[in-house]
Image 1 (tube, one colour):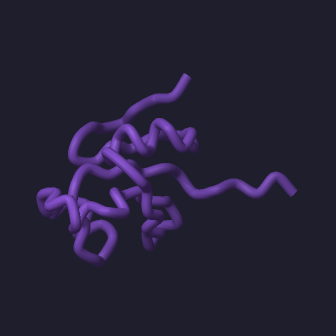
Image 2: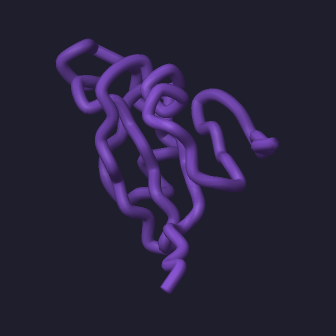
Length: 80
């Protein structure tokens, strides 16, 4: 079972999520935003065009302007 660690405007998961889950959280097409700590942030690819609200917490984490709700997943694990 997936544990959601926090919610809107940032939802943090403790494991990778299916595309549909990420799209539901951000409200559309997803854009990958790598974070400095190795985790992945997923934002709405069309957020600016849709006029989504500025997300100061996500912007601070990523070091770039982020709008709308986002999802964060842990770093990918290599099974090699």
